[in-house]
Amino acid sequence: MRKVAGTTALTVLGLIVIVLSSAWLRTPGFTQGGFASHDVAGILYNAMVLDRGGLPYVDTLELKAPGTFYLATWFAGPEARDIARFQIAANLWALLGLVLVAGLGWRLWGKLGALASAGLYALHDAHLDSMDANYVTWANAPQIAAFWLGIEAGRARSDRWRPTLWMLAGALASFAALCKRPDAVVLLALLVMAGVCSSARTRGWARAVDPGCVLAGFVLGHTPITLQYLAAGQLGALVDGYFLNRWGLRYVGASELGLGPSLREGALASAHFLGLAVVLASFPLFAALGRRVGAWRRAAALQESEARQLRELGFVLAWLLGTLIAASLGFRFYKGYFVAVAAPLCLLAAAPIGLLGRRCPAHWAPRALVLALCSVLVGRELLILDHTRADRAKPHDLGGRRIAAHLLANTQADDTIWIWGWHLWDVYPLAGRMSASTIYKSLGILSQPNDDTWRRPATRLRFVESEYSAQLIRELDAARPAYVVLGSTVPHRDFDELKSFLRRDYRRDYRVRIGRVQFWRRR
Image (tube, rainbow, N blue to C red; front, side, top):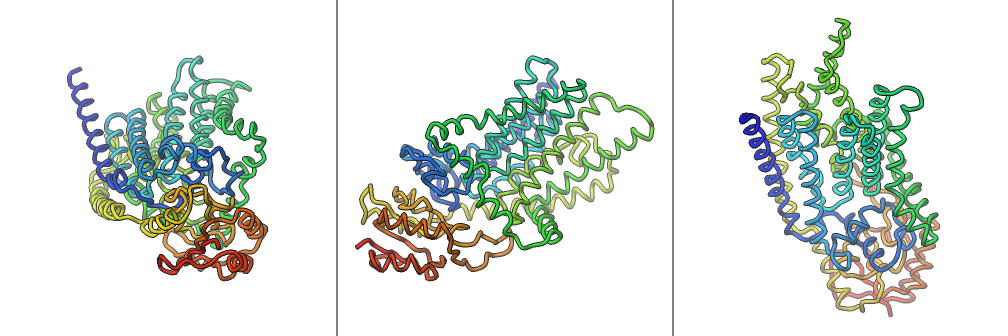
Protein backbone atom coordinates (compact mmCIF):
# COMPACT_ATOMS: atom_id res chain seq x y z
CA MET A 1 0.00 0.00 0.00
CA ARG A 2 2.84 2.37 0.93
CA LYS A 3 4.61 1.54 -2.36
CA VAL A 4 1.46 2.35 -4.37
CA ALA A 5 1.05 5.66 -2.53
CA GLY A 6 4.71 6.45 -3.21
CA THR A 7 4.47 5.81 -6.95
CA THR A 8 1.25 7.84 -7.10
CA ALA A 9 2.93 10.77 -5.35
CA LEU A 10 5.91 10.57 -7.72
CA THR A 11 3.57 10.48 -10.72
CA VAL A 12 1.66 13.52 -9.51
CA LEU A 13 4.94 15.34 -8.84
CA GLY A 14 6.17 14.48 -12.34
CA LEU A 15 2.94 15.78 -13.89
CA ILE A 16 3.19 19.01 -11.89
CA VAL A 17 6.73 19.50 -13.22
CA ILE A 18 5.50 18.92 -16.80
CA VAL A 19 2.64 21.42 -16.41
CA LEU A 20 4.90 24.05 -14.80
CA SER A 21 7.50 23.57 -17.55
CA SER A 22 4.81 24.06 -20.18
CA ALA A 23 3.60 27.18 -18.35
CA TRP A 24 7.17 28.54 -18.40
CA LEU A 25 7.41 27.90 -22.14
CA ARG A 26 4.20 29.90 -22.54
CA THR A 27 5.30 32.82 -20.35
CA PRO A 28 5.44 35.30 -23.28
CA GLY A 29 1.72 34.64 -23.73
CA PHE A 30 1.15 35.66 -20.12
CA THR A 31 3.13 38.89 -20.38
CA GLN A 32 3.51 40.01 -24.03
CA GLY A 33 -0.03 41.34 -24.39
CA GLY A 34 -0.16 41.73 -28.16
CA PHE A 35 -1.66 39.99 -31.17
CA ALA A 36 0.36 36.97 -32.23
CA SER A 37 -2.31 36.15 -34.82
CA HIS A 38 -4.56 38.58 -36.65
CA ASP A 39 -7.30 35.93 -36.56
CA VAL A 40 -7.65 36.65 -32.85
CA ALA A 41 -8.51 40.26 -33.72
CA GLY A 42 -11.51 38.83 -35.58
CA ILE A 43 -12.55 37.02 -32.40
CA LEU A 44 -12.33 40.20 -30.34
CA TYR A 45 -14.17 42.27 -32.94
CA ASN A 46 -17.14 39.90 -32.86
CA ALA A 47 -17.00 40.01 -29.07
CA MET A 48 -17.21 43.81 -29.32
CA VAL A 49 -20.30 43.39 -31.51
CA LEU A 50 -21.89 41.11 -28.89
CA ASP A 51 -20.91 43.51 -26.10
CA ARG A 52 -22.77 46.29 -27.93
CA GLY A 53 -25.92 44.22 -28.37
CA GLY A 54 -25.27 43.02 -31.92
CA LEU A 55 -24.96 39.52 -33.37
CA PRO A 56 -22.26 37.88 -35.49
CA TYR A 57 -23.54 36.86 -38.96
CA VAL A 58 -26.06 39.71 -38.68
CA ASP A 59 -23.83 42.70 -37.93
CA THR A 60 -20.73 41.02 -39.39
CA LEU A 61 -20.20 38.94 -42.49
CA GLU A 62 -18.38 36.20 -40.62
CA LEU A 63 -16.62 33.01 -41.76
CA LYS A 64 -15.74 31.50 -38.37
CA ALA A 65 -17.68 29.56 -35.74
CA PRO A 66 -19.15 31.75 -32.96
CA GLY A 67 -18.10 30.01 -29.73
CA THR A 68 -14.86 31.94 -29.24
CA PHE A 69 -16.73 35.23 -29.66
CA TYR A 70 -18.78 34.48 -26.57
CA LEU A 71 -15.69 33.33 -24.65
CA ALA A 72 -14.05 36.66 -25.47
CA THR A 73 -16.99 38.55 -23.95
CA TRP A 74 -16.15 36.74 -20.69
CA PHE A 75 -12.35 36.77 -20.81
CA ALA A 76 -11.34 39.87 -22.80
CA GLY A 77 -12.16 42.60 -20.29
CA PRO A 78 -15.11 44.95 -19.80
CA GLU A 79 -15.27 46.05 -23.46
CA ALA A 80 -14.42 42.56 -24.81
CA ARG A 81 -11.26 43.84 -26.56
CA ASP A 82 -8.40 43.42 -24.07
CA ILE A 83 -5.97 41.13 -25.90
CA ALA A 84 -3.64 40.84 -22.87
CA ARG A 85 -6.40 39.41 -20.66
CA PHE A 86 -7.64 37.18 -23.45
CA GLN A 87 -4.16 35.74 -23.98
CA ILE A 88 -3.74 34.93 -20.31
CA ALA A 89 -7.08 33.12 -20.28
CA ALA A 90 -6.17 31.26 -23.50
CA ASN A 91 -2.85 30.05 -22.13
CA LEU A 92 -4.50 28.84 -18.93
CA TRP A 93 -7.09 27.12 -21.12
CA ALA A 94 -4.30 25.44 -23.10
CA LEU A 95 -2.69 24.24 -19.85
CA LEU A 96 -6.08 22.77 -18.92
CA GLY A 97 -5.86 20.78 -22.17
CA LEU A 98 -2.48 19.43 -21.04
CA VAL A 99 -3.96 18.44 -17.66
CA LEU A 100 -6.82 16.67 -19.46
CA VAL A 101 -4.35 14.73 -21.63
CA ALA A 102 -2.49 13.68 -18.49
CA GLY A 103 -5.71 12.62 -16.74
CA LEU A 104 -6.96 10.74 -19.78
CA GLY A 105 -3.58 9.01 -20.16
CA TRP A 106 -3.76 7.94 -16.51
CA ARG A 107 -7.30 6.66 -16.95
CA LEU A 108 -6.45 4.71 -20.10
CA TRP A 109 -2.92 3.46 -19.50
CA GLY A 110 -2.07 4.06 -15.83
CA LYS A 111 0.55 6.23 -14.16
CA LEU A 112 3.36 5.70 -16.67
CA GLY A 113 0.90 6.38 -19.47
CA ALA A 114 -0.05 9.67 -17.83
CA LEU A 115 3.58 10.81 -17.65
CA ALA A 116 4.38 9.67 -21.18
CA SER A 117 1.31 11.19 -22.82
CA ALA A 118 1.59 14.50 -20.92
CA GLY A 119 5.34 14.76 -21.55
CA LEU A 120 4.93 14.13 -25.28
CA TYR A 121 2.02 16.54 -25.54
CA ALA A 122 3.96 19.26 -23.70
CA LEU A 123 6.78 18.89 -26.24
CA HIS A 124 4.39 19.79 -29.05
CA ASP A 125 1.43 21.92 -28.02
CA ALA A 126 3.18 25.16 -26.99
CA HIS A 127 4.64 25.33 -30.49
CA LEU A 128 1.55 24.20 -32.40
CA ASP A 129 -0.76 26.75 -30.77
CA SER A 130 1.81 29.54 -30.47
CA MET A 131 -0.76 31.93 -32.02
CA ASP A 132 -2.15 32.61 -28.55
CA ALA A 133 -5.93 32.62 -28.14
CA ASN A 134 -6.70 31.38 -31.65
CA TYR A 135 -9.69 29.17 -32.47
CA VAL A 136 -7.66 25.93 -32.21
CA THR A 137 -6.66 26.66 -28.62
CA TRP A 138 -10.23 27.13 -27.39
CA ALA A 139 -11.60 24.08 -29.25
CA ASN A 140 -8.98 21.62 -28.06
CA ALA A 141 -9.78 21.29 -24.34
CA PRO A 142 -13.52 20.55 -24.80
CA GLN A 143 -12.64 18.04 -27.53
CA ILE A 144 -10.30 16.14 -25.17
CA ALA A 145 -12.87 16.33 -22.36
CA ALA A 146 -15.58 15.00 -24.69
CA PHE A 147 -13.50 11.95 -25.57
CA TRP A 148 -12.67 11.33 -21.90
CA LEU A 149 -16.36 11.38 -21.02
CA GLY A 150 -16.93 8.89 -23.85
CA ILE A 151 -14.40 6.55 -22.25
CA GLU A 152 -16.15 6.90 -18.87
CA ALA A 153 -19.53 6.25 -20.47
CA GLY A 154 -18.20 3.13 -22.19
CA ARG A 155 -16.86 1.81 -18.89
CA ALA A 156 -19.94 2.71 -16.84
CA ARG A 157 -21.68 -0.26 -15.24
CA SER A 158 -24.76 1.64 -14.14
CA ASP A 159 -27.59 2.14 -16.61
CA ARG A 160 -28.54 5.17 -14.57
CA TRP A 161 -25.40 7.22 -15.33
CA ARG A 162 -24.43 5.93 -18.76
CA PRO A 163 -26.96 7.99 -20.84
CA THR A 164 -26.03 11.14 -18.91
CA LEU A 165 -22.33 10.62 -19.60
CA TRP A 166 -22.97 10.07 -23.32
CA MET A 167 -25.09 13.23 -23.46
CA LEU A 168 -22.42 15.27 -21.65
CA ALA A 169 -19.82 13.94 -24.08
CA GLY A 170 -22.00 15.05 -27.00
CA ALA A 171 -22.53 18.47 -25.43
CA LEU A 172 -18.78 18.98 -25.05
CA ALA A 173 -18.33 17.91 -28.68
CA SER A 174 -20.77 20.67 -29.62
CA PHE A 175 -18.73 23.14 -27.53
CA ALA A 176 -15.61 22.13 -29.50
CA ALA A 177 -17.50 22.54 -32.79
CA LEU A 178 -18.78 25.96 -31.74
CA CYS A 179 -15.18 27.04 -31.16
CA LYS A 180 -13.88 25.51 -34.41
CA ARG A 181 -16.18 23.63 -36.78
CA PRO A 182 -13.70 20.90 -37.90
CA ASP A 183 -13.28 19.80 -34.27
CA ALA A 184 -16.79 18.39 -34.51
CA VAL A 185 -15.02 15.24 -35.78
CA VAL A 186 -14.80 14.12 -32.16
CA LEU A 187 -18.55 13.55 -32.48
CA LEU A 188 -17.84 10.81 -35.04
CA ALA A 189 -15.41 9.13 -32.66
CA LEU A 190 -18.01 9.30 -29.88
CA LEU A 191 -20.66 7.74 -32.13
CA VAL A 192 -18.26 4.89 -32.95
CA MET A 193 -17.52 4.39 -29.26
CA ALA A 194 -21.18 4.47 -28.29
CA GLY A 195 -22.11 2.05 -31.07
CA VAL A 196 -19.39 -0.47 -30.18
CA CYS A 197 -20.06 -0.33 -26.44
CA SER A 198 -23.83 -0.57 -26.96
CA SER A 199 -23.52 -3.54 -29.34
CA ALA A 200 -21.45 -5.44 -26.79
CA ARG A 201 -24.11 -4.94 -24.11
CA THR A 202 -27.54 -4.96 -25.84
CA ARG A 203 -29.38 -6.20 -28.90
CA GLY A 204 -31.91 -4.81 -31.36
CA TRP A 205 -33.09 -1.23 -31.27
CA ALA A 206 -31.64 -0.77 -27.78
CA ARG A 207 -28.22 -0.47 -29.41
CA ALA A 208 -29.25 2.92 -30.78
CA VAL A 209 -29.85 4.44 -27.33
CA ASP A 210 -26.23 5.36 -26.55
CA PRO A 211 -25.46 6.92 -29.97
CA GLY A 212 -28.81 8.70 -29.72
CA CYS A 213 -27.77 10.19 -26.37
CA VAL A 214 -24.52 11.47 -27.95
CA LEU A 215 -26.47 13.15 -30.75
CA ALA A 216 -28.98 14.57 -28.27
CA GLY A 217 -26.15 16.10 -26.25
CA PHE A 218 -24.64 17.58 -29.41
CA VAL A 219 -27.97 19.17 -30.37
CA LEU A 220 -28.62 20.43 -26.84
CA GLY A 221 -25.17 22.03 -26.78
CA HIS A 222 -26.24 24.20 -29.71
CA THR A 223 -29.60 25.11 -28.15
CA PRO A 224 -28.63 28.32 -26.24
CA ILE A 225 -27.14 30.09 -29.26
CA THR A 226 -29.98 28.85 -31.49
CA LEU A 227 -32.56 30.27 -29.07
CA GLN A 228 -30.72 33.60 -28.93
CA TYR A 229 -30.84 34.00 -32.71
CA LEU A 230 -34.40 32.73 -32.83
CA ALA A 231 -35.49 35.32 -30.26
CA ALA A 232 -33.84 38.03 -32.35
CA GLY A 233 -35.58 36.80 -35.50
CA GLN A 234 -32.22 35.97 -37.06
CA LEU A 235 -32.17 32.15 -37.10
CA GLY A 236 -31.61 32.24 -40.86
CA ALA A 237 -28.41 34.26 -40.36
CA LEU A 238 -27.09 31.65 -37.92
CA VAL A 239 -27.93 28.80 -40.28
CA ASP A 240 -26.35 30.57 -43.24
CA GLY A 241 -23.28 31.79 -41.36
CA TYR A 242 -22.48 28.89 -39.04
CA PHE A 243 -24.24 25.70 -40.06
CA LEU A 244 -23.89 26.12 -43.85
CA ASN A 245 -21.28 28.84 -44.38
CA ARG A 246 -20.75 29.10 -48.14
CA TRP A 247 -17.47 30.99 -47.66
CA GLY A 248 -16.03 28.09 -45.68
CA LEU A 249 -17.03 25.69 -48.45
CA ARG A 250 -15.41 28.01 -50.96
CA TYR A 251 -12.22 28.00 -48.87
CA VAL A 252 -12.17 24.19 -48.65
CA GLY A 253 -12.64 23.83 -52.39
CA ALA A 254 -10.05 26.44 -53.38
CA SER A 255 -7.02 24.11 -53.35
CA GLU A 256 -5.71 23.25 -56.80
CA LEU A 257 -3.63 20.27 -55.66
CA GLY A 258 -4.75 16.82 -56.71
CA LEU A 259 -5.48 14.05 -54.25
CA GLY A 260 -2.04 12.43 -54.55
CA PRO A 261 -0.01 15.63 -53.95
CA SER A 262 -2.39 16.64 -51.14
CA LEU A 263 -1.91 13.32 -49.34
CA ARG A 264 1.84 13.70 -49.73
CA GLU A 265 1.67 17.21 -48.32
CA GLY A 266 -0.36 15.93 -45.37
CA ALA A 267 2.16 13.17 -44.63
CA LEU A 268 5.05 15.65 -44.80
CA ALA A 269 3.24 18.12 -42.54
CA SER A 270 2.43 15.40 -39.99
CA ALA A 271 6.04 14.26 -39.95
CA HIS A 272 7.27 17.83 -39.64
CA PHE A 273 4.99 18.94 -36.82
CA LEU A 274 4.53 15.65 -34.93
CA GLY A 275 7.44 13.45 -36.03
CA LEU A 276 8.37 12.28 -32.53
CA ALA A 277 4.81 11.29 -31.63
CA VAL A 278 4.30 9.64 -35.05
CA VAL A 279 7.32 7.39 -34.54
CA LEU A 280 6.26 6.39 -31.04
CA ALA A 281 2.58 5.92 -31.94
CA SER A 282 3.40 3.39 -34.66
CA PHE A 283 4.50 0.81 -32.07
CA PRO A 284 1.17 0.41 -30.24
CA LEU A 285 -0.62 -0.05 -33.57
CA PHE A 286 1.69 -2.85 -34.74
CA ALA A 287 1.63 -4.47 -31.30
CA ALA A 288 -2.18 -4.36 -31.12
CA LEU A 289 -2.49 -5.84 -34.59
CA GLY A 290 -0.02 -8.58 -33.67
CA ARG A 291 -1.98 -9.50 -30.55
CA ARG A 292 -5.25 -9.70 -32.44
CA VAL A 293 -3.71 -11.89 -35.12
CA GLY A 294 -2.06 -14.09 -32.50
CA ALA A 295 -5.33 -14.57 -30.60
CA TRP A 296 -7.13 -15.41 -33.85
CA ARG A 297 -4.52 -18.04 -34.78
CA ARG A 298 -4.79 -19.64 -31.37
CA ALA A 299 -8.59 -19.42 -31.54
CA ALA A 300 -8.35 -17.96 -28.06
CA ALA A 301 -10.24 -15.02 -26.58
CA LEU A 302 -8.26 -12.18 -25.06
CA GLN A 303 -8.61 -11.53 -21.37
CA GLU A 304 -11.25 -8.94 -20.49
CA SER A 305 -8.74 -6.31 -19.35
CA GLU A 306 -6.59 -6.83 -22.43
CA ALA A 307 -9.60 -6.78 -24.75
CA ARG A 308 -10.80 -3.52 -23.17
CA GLN A 309 -7.36 -1.98 -23.56
CA LEU A 310 -7.21 -2.88 -27.25
CA ARG A 311 -10.79 -1.68 -27.76
CA GLU A 312 -9.96 1.70 -26.20
CA LEU A 313 -6.78 1.82 -28.26
CA GLY A 314 -9.06 1.51 -31.28
CA PHE A 315 -11.22 4.37 -29.96
CA VAL A 316 -8.13 6.61 -29.68
CA LEU A 317 -7.20 5.62 -33.23
CA ALA A 318 -10.69 6.53 -34.48
CA TRP A 319 -10.35 9.93 -32.79
CA LEU A 320 -6.89 10.37 -34.32
CA LEU A 321 -8.15 9.59 -37.83
CA GLY A 322 -10.96 12.12 -37.39
CA THR A 323 -8.53 14.87 -36.34
CA LEU A 324 -6.26 14.06 -39.30
CA ILE A 325 -9.23 14.44 -41.65
CA ALA A 326 -10.11 17.76 -40.00
CA ALA A 327 -6.50 18.98 -40.31
CA SER A 328 -6.60 18.12 -44.02
CA LEU A 329 -9.67 20.21 -44.89
CA GLY A 330 -8.64 22.62 -47.61
CA PHE A 331 -5.24 20.87 -47.88
CA ARG A 332 -3.37 23.83 -46.31
CA PHE A 333 -2.06 21.86 -43.31
CA TYR A 334 -1.37 24.93 -41.20
CA LYS A 335 0.57 24.36 -38.00
CA GLY A 336 -2.33 25.20 -35.71
CA TYR A 337 -4.54 22.52 -37.28
CA PHE A 338 -2.30 19.85 -35.74
CA VAL A 339 -3.02 20.88 -32.15
CA ALA A 340 -6.13 18.68 -32.27
CA VAL A 341 -4.08 15.82 -33.78
CA ALA A 342 -1.46 15.99 -31.04
CA ALA A 343 -3.72 14.83 -28.17
CA PRO A 344 -4.85 11.44 -29.58
CA LEU A 345 -1.45 10.83 -31.19
CA CYS A 346 0.42 11.37 -27.90
CA LEU A 347 -2.09 9.17 -26.06
CA LEU A 348 -1.58 6.46 -28.67
CA ALA A 349 2.20 6.74 -28.31
CA ALA A 350 1.93 6.34 -24.52
CA ALA A 351 -0.01 3.04 -24.64
CA PRO A 352 1.47 0.25 -22.45
CA ILE A 353 2.18 -1.92 -25.52
CA GLY A 354 4.01 0.95 -27.19
CA LEU A 355 7.70 1.74 -27.17
CA LEU A 356 7.42 3.69 -23.90
CA GLY A 357 5.10 1.17 -22.24
CA ARG A 358 5.86 -1.59 -19.78
CA ARG A 359 4.38 -4.25 -22.08
CA CYS A 360 6.26 -3.39 -25.26
CA PRO A 361 6.74 -6.66 -27.20
CA ALA A 362 9.62 -5.33 -29.32
CA HIS A 363 13.09 -6.87 -28.96
CA TRP A 364 15.60 -4.75 -27.08
CA ALA A 365 17.79 -4.11 -30.15
CA PRO A 366 15.20 -2.37 -32.40
CA ARG A 367 13.75 -0.75 -29.31
CA ALA A 368 17.14 0.80 -28.44
CA LEU A 369 17.63 1.91 -32.05
CA VAL A 370 14.28 3.69 -32.19
CA LEU A 371 14.84 5.27 -28.78
CA ALA A 372 18.15 6.66 -30.06
CA LEU A 373 16.29 8.19 -33.01
CA CYS A 374 13.66 9.57 -30.65
CA SER A 375 16.33 11.24 -28.51
CA VAL A 376 17.36 13.23 -31.60
CA LEU A 377 13.71 14.14 -32.22
CA VAL A 378 13.31 15.24 -28.60
CA GLY A 379 16.29 17.55 -29.04
CA ARG A 380 14.69 18.94 -32.19
CA GLU A 381 11.43 19.64 -30.35
CA LEU A 382 13.28 21.44 -27.56
CA LEU A 383 15.06 23.66 -30.10
CA ILE A 384 11.71 24.42 -31.78
CA LEU A 385 10.16 25.32 -28.42
CA ASP A 386 13.09 27.60 -27.58
CA HIS A 387 12.73 29.37 -30.93
CA THR A 388 8.95 29.65 -30.48
CA ARG A 389 9.33 31.12 -27.02
CA ALA A 390 11.86 33.70 -28.22
CA ASP A 391 9.70 34.64 -31.21
CA ARG A 392 6.55 34.90 -29.12
CA ALA A 393 8.30 37.30 -26.75
CA LYS A 394 8.62 39.80 -29.63
CA PRO A 395 5.66 42.05 -30.48
CA HIS A 396 4.02 41.23 -33.82
CA ASP A 397 1.44 44.02 -33.93
CA LEU A 398 3.47 47.24 -33.71
CA GLY A 399 2.07 48.50 -37.01
CA GLY A 400 -1.49 47.94 -35.85
CA ARG A 401 -0.75 49.74 -32.59
CA ARG A 402 0.62 52.79 -34.42
CA ILE A 403 -2.42 52.90 -36.66
CA ALA A 404 -4.77 52.51 -33.70
CA ALA A 405 -3.00 55.33 -31.81
CA HIS A 406 -3.42 57.65 -34.80
CA LEU A 407 -7.11 56.82 -35.18
CA LEU A 408 -7.74 57.26 -31.45
CA ALA A 409 -6.19 60.71 -31.59
CA ASN A 410 -8.26 61.80 -34.60
CA THR A 411 -11.69 60.21 -34.10
CA GLN A 412 -14.49 60.25 -31.54
CA ALA A 413 -15.66 57.21 -29.58
CA ASP A 414 -18.81 56.82 -31.68
CA ASP A 415 -17.03 57.24 -35.03
CA THR A 416 -16.76 54.23 -37.32
CA ILE A 417 -13.78 53.18 -39.43
CA TRP A 418 -13.10 50.68 -42.16
CA ILE A 419 -9.91 48.64 -42.53
CA TRP A 420 -8.82 46.59 -45.54
CA GLY A 421 -6.00 44.17 -44.87
CA TRP A 422 -5.64 40.91 -42.93
CA HIS A 423 -2.62 42.22 -41.01
CA LEU A 424 -4.63 45.30 -39.95
CA TRP A 425 -7.63 43.59 -38.29
CA ASP A 426 -5.91 44.28 -34.96
CA VAL A 427 -6.82 47.96 -35.31
CA TYR A 428 -10.52 47.41 -34.53
CA PRO A 429 -10.04 46.11 -30.96
CA LEU A 430 -6.88 48.17 -30.35
CA ALA A 431 -8.68 51.40 -31.25
CA GLY A 432 -12.06 50.36 -29.88
CA ARG A 433 -13.76 51.53 -33.08
CA MET A 434 -16.45 49.62 -34.96
CA SER A 435 -16.46 48.87 -38.66
CA ALA A 436 -18.64 50.98 -40.94
CA SER A 437 -19.53 47.82 -42.88
CA THR A 438 -20.57 44.31 -41.96
CA ILE A 439 -17.65 43.28 -44.21
CA TYR A 440 -15.05 44.10 -41.58
CA LYS A 441 -12.58 41.53 -42.93
CA SER A 442 -12.26 40.82 -46.60
CA LEU A 443 -10.02 37.80 -47.19
CA GLY A 444 -12.02 35.38 -49.34
CA ILE A 445 -14.79 37.96 -49.80
CA LEU A 446 -13.27 40.95 -51.63
CA SER A 447 -10.38 38.78 -52.79
CA GLN A 448 -9.76 35.11 -53.49
CA PRO A 449 -9.47 32.68 -50.55
CA ASN A 450 -5.98 32.42 -49.11
CA ASP A 451 -4.07 29.73 -50.99
CA ASP A 452 -0.88 29.51 -48.96
CA THR A 453 -0.03 26.23 -47.20
CA TRP A 454 2.12 25.20 -44.26
CA ARG A 455 5.25 25.64 -46.40
CA ARG A 456 4.22 27.58 -49.51
CA PRO A 457 3.58 31.35 -49.62
CA ALA A 458 0.31 32.80 -50.85
CA THR A 459 -0.08 34.15 -54.35
CA ARG A 460 -0.68 37.86 -54.88
CA LEU A 461 -4.15 38.97 -53.77
CA ARG A 462 -6.64 39.66 -56.55
CA PHE A 463 -9.74 41.81 -56.24
CA VAL A 464 -12.94 39.82 -56.88
CA GLU A 465 -15.92 41.89 -57.95
CA SER A 466 -19.13 40.42 -56.56
CA GLU A 467 -22.33 41.20 -54.67
CA TYR A 468 -20.16 41.75 -51.60
CA SER A 469 -18.06 44.51 -53.18
CA ALA A 470 -21.29 46.28 -54.14
CA GLN A 471 -22.65 45.76 -50.62
CA LEU A 472 -19.48 47.24 -49.15
CA ILE A 473 -19.79 50.44 -51.17
CA ARG A 474 -23.45 50.82 -50.20
CA GLU A 475 -22.65 50.40 -46.51
CA LEU A 476 -19.65 52.75 -46.61
CA ASP A 477 -21.69 55.36 -48.45
CA ALA A 478 -24.44 55.13 -45.81
CA ALA A 479 -22.14 55.13 -42.76
CA ARG A 480 -19.40 57.51 -44.01
CA PRO A 481 -16.64 56.20 -41.69
CA ALA A 482 -14.25 58.73 -40.18
CA TYR A 483 -11.28 56.85 -41.59
CA VAL A 484 -10.60 54.25 -44.27
CA VAL A 485 -7.25 52.47 -43.95
CA LEU A 486 -5.90 50.41 -46.85
CA GLY A 487 -3.16 47.85 -46.26
CA SER A 488 -0.02 47.68 -48.37
CA THR A 489 -0.80 44.27 -49.89
CA VAL A 490 -4.53 44.55 -50.69
CA PRO A 491 -5.59 45.05 -54.34
CA HIS A 492 -7.38 48.37 -53.73
CA ARG A 493 -6.13 49.82 -57.02
CA ASP A 494 -8.35 47.33 -58.88
CA PHE A 495 -11.49 48.32 -56.94
CA ASP A 496 -12.76 51.21 -59.08
CA GLU A 497 -15.92 51.89 -57.04
CA LEU A 498 -13.87 52.22 -53.85
CA LYS A 499 -11.44 54.61 -55.54
CA SER A 500 -14.33 56.79 -56.71
CA PHE A 501 -15.87 56.79 -53.24
CA LEU A 502 -12.60 57.84 -51.61
CA ARG A 503 -11.82 60.56 -54.17
CA ARG A 504 -15.30 62.04 -53.76
CA ASP A 505 -15.63 62.14 -49.99
CA TYR A 506 -12.14 61.62 -48.49
CA ARG A 507 -8.62 62.99 -48.58
CA ARG A 508 -5.27 61.32 -47.89
CA ASP A 509 -3.81 61.74 -44.42
CA TYR A 510 0.00 61.81 -44.58
CA ARG A 511 0.66 62.58 -40.92
CA VAL A 512 1.67 59.00 -40.19
CA ARG A 513 3.71 56.79 -42.51
CA ILE A 514 3.71 52.99 -42.11
CA GLY A 515 5.09 51.32 -45.21
CA ARG A 516 2.62 51.66 -48.08
CA VAL A 517 -0.45 51.79 -45.82
CA GLN A 518 -2.88 54.49 -46.96
CA PHE A 519 -4.95 56.62 -44.56
CA TRP A 520 -8.06 58.29 -45.97
CA ARG A 521 -9.81 60.83 -43.74
CA ARG A 522 -13.40 61.97 -44.24
CA ARG A 523 -13.62 65.50 -45.64
